[in-house]
Image 1 (cartoon, rainbow, N blue to C red):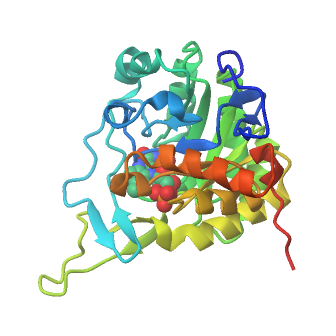
Image 2 (image 1 turned 90 degrees about the vertical axis):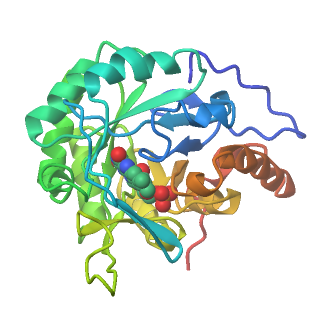
Length: 317
Ligand SMILES: Cc1cc2nc3c(=O)[nH]c(=O)nc-3n(C[C@H](O)[C@H](O)[C@H](O)COP(=O)(O)O)c2cc1C
């Protein structure tokens, strides 16, 4: 982050991976996606979390939640379907235990917040206001796996504007609404978020899907439906990121199926200032390290000194 990161001077042999988003400097554009790395503790056993640009933690709600009964994940062709149901420790335990764990790392901490009604979003964001370790909030208004809240707020530009405006009043640092792809006009929703005062916009959350066991004739998830993630959704995500990049002036954070450096580069060319790795972490938990190395190799091969030279540089027909 701005205050802590000691970014090395750019030299020809070491391209600069740092990106500036909402006035904060991240050492690289590689973030983890909410719900795919818990609160960071497990990932820390695999690689040094300091190597990440930022960690986006699992959605937290006002109260702890066990989530849906299992089975709540199903492997699909080129992806996975999940209906975890926002299992989390609740904001109080998050603040006293989980955020504290991240204290020792020089990494951006983005707290993903979910809610079941308007007031819950505002209350949880207000409770994070005095936690300086919560650098930014990613507002999950796009969860497809709960019956109220989540995606209900993310489906209307007016509601998105209203909720962003409300949380901006109680949280003094950047707010990043996370948008759902399960809408008709993503650009309109993004403009609603910007209108409400969003500092950046993250997208996409999962695409609603279903899968059935042909012998029991039961859906493979107890929630019946779930959210599709992984490589299968990358083209949808790239298209939406690019639409939103063209529609708003705030930075865009790309999410959806990114599994290697090439994918990250594609997201950045389409307009993303940072890219979150999600489902791919389940296959290769130390992927961020490999991506970081491969991004440097790519920049060198292209004679580019800074990764920011890629942002939005797609040459469309
Ligand atoms: C198991 C699982 C749990 C998730 N939980 C959350 C969550 O709590 N909050 C959230 O905003 N997104 C959640 N997501 C969505 C991811 O953050 C991401 O938006 C989505 O998976 C697309 O990226 P990917 O294809 O790289 O995984 C979850 C995804 C998975 C696979």
